[in-house]
Image: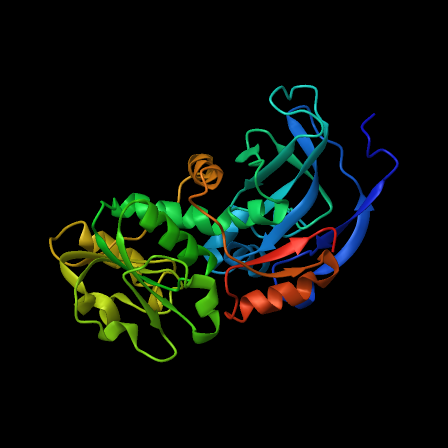
Length: 330
């Protein structure tokens, strides 16, 4: 019997259907038992992120075909975790009790809970030893999407790139990954977050509350709208003749998907829409950069599980600056 046996119940988020934060509650339930190919993880930290928005709300509607249709696959919300293995199934060979692990799956994992069973074929890895659980979990969702942005763009050293939203989880990760690849980066940020980004060696930093970034005159090879608040039409003139616009959102009236298809059929300025692959590919890359001291995720606020509703409301407000953490020891 594992060392957590004296605890028989845990606290977890719970909802029956997709909906707003008023549909989410905290319940006390029995601690689950791992199946043969699962580990039981005592969650130390998780995040409330933009993917969790889809898991909570079930929007856009197509997201439900991944997160569960017609109802959520997991009663608990949560897509990522960092914690400690406290029990495991008899078919698990690559993890031991006491191992520190972390992982992410954009379809949902039900990790807004004190304990969670994770199948070992899920995107899960040993946590980098040189960082905290809070930092580890902050390095997953945003960096995952940023990684696939760069994969579709095929960034080369010297490429000129504009990132809109360098204080978001995705945008901040994108800036750091671009700098690592040798790109010349210009990015936007809000006035109150200058201290969060001033250390990044960018070509130029634009306070979007004081200046419209779309009024730049020098052309860029790529424009990454990491917050999805602009459009191809508004940014097209910023691109060089073969430049590419990429957004983290579908765009006005969902235009980015059809525009990306059209872009495959013609030359010139175009939209590329990244369909992220498995975190099994992104996590090892980001983990290596963390261990090398080349990437440090941006953390905004830390909440307790009891205040996860407030964390969701803050995330949904669109005002977050980096990652919003749920720490189980708060």
